[in-house]
Image 1 (cartoon, rainbow over the protein chains, first blue to last red):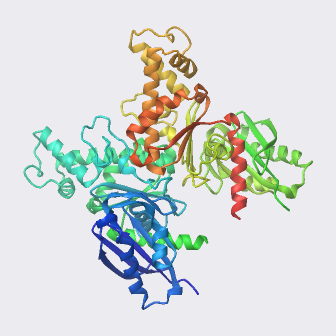
Image 2 (cartoon, one colour):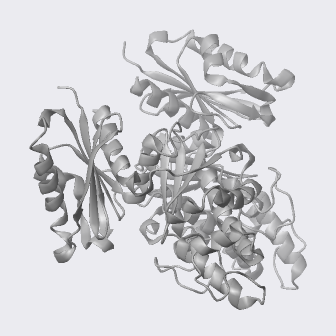
Image 3 (cartoon, chains in turn orange, brown):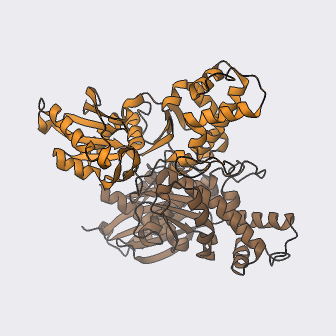
Length: 315
Length: 315
């Protein structure tokens, strides 16, 4: 029986997104269920299994390649999650647990890593095999693709580029417990923090003064050529450009794809990142392309589906 | 016919090392030939082919798995070198060129990447599948191993961690043309530079004052608890520990293996690197092991041999 379909599941802290795809990457159906995090999140995978089983009633089971899962925590290549605080999960094997519930091949990975695979398959990274996807949202996430495959890392923590240390002088503590992480400067929260600091430290006139300060208002102000906002964007670009240059020194990707809510600012983001990247990076990596993510919040379900297709192809 | 033997070739700027191995990784024979770099290094691969062919006269050709090659330049997964200045090489396909000369399967990689594979196979990284090898010599080289396989990068520049930008205030220019590269602080040359700067900037007494200043004398002085040398070792450890923490945020290895001439100082090196690494790194990567390389200058021939064995196993 030829494989025709694959499920992609993106487990978030409040909702689980589920997509049904054909093997060419077209979305056939897409829906959400609530994430029940009580009792160490013990209901999450049974709920996912029930929802997929319900959908499968109208389908030929033999044509289904399997179920891919992305979740917000470190998940290694064997499918073991090493604690996912937002879901209440401790350490257990996500792949094996869901396989026992649904009787289909399952693969699992960290949500940011999986989203990177999605962007490579059907999004802003299409056509590249060596790719780094950076997600600038509340935090900074990352996913590393080498030769078309997602890297999980030895304990599922590959691509945690939001926690690369970039500033020795920072006194505020990052969510991770360290000080001076990239996330403190390049996330939506980080950009807001940089702007508020700049507003407090200078008398410079700015459209941001007295109004709402957010990553969106900062980059709107940059587009209006507000000098203070442009200084903030410079700071952001320096931190992120230098960090991506370090990432390039490790895996030498063909391209960086920038996603997450902050990326809605558009190409102007890249205009601020790229010059700093080019200045810091090893010359052999200088030609890397920069692109914007295109799948938005669906990157996770796409990538999860691709993860299980890759695994099935390897057998 | 069962494969029994494999050749590993490490091309350096003055000599080419060649090793004959059995497939279990035992060295059966080892020799050197001069590297003839004249005329864009056009004689190098023919000389290698002649030398191997001479050795093969006493062997059963059908039992030879192939020839692996490491060379000092960016070499991508297809075997294309993108200029190797020390050899006079411009851009061409090393793998295909040598295959045409010797009629055996060939694989090629950057020398530092290949050496990392060697340390994983039979050296300080034995038993690990996710590994970063850092070579502290005249420069700082690196090799990244993910799931047992060497990463080449899109243009052969993966693992160029010596050129991660670590200092915005540096005014001296690195060999690569940038300023503030890790190599300027953590190589043998970099340690010497740090020590000379420290000696010039303070009146502190030190056994280094007036004598020969080198990475070796600095770490000998550290072992004798010379306060100035210990401050230099702290600076070295901070630069390298922070940079390896950034590397961990990308590929999340099980272990770091430290090699190169500077590593002859021994475990004391790790004592200076590890605390800075642990302070800067994402908590999910904090448990990484640190070990010393054990193959010395033979890492390249071991890794080159393993590279071709991996490729043959994949067919």
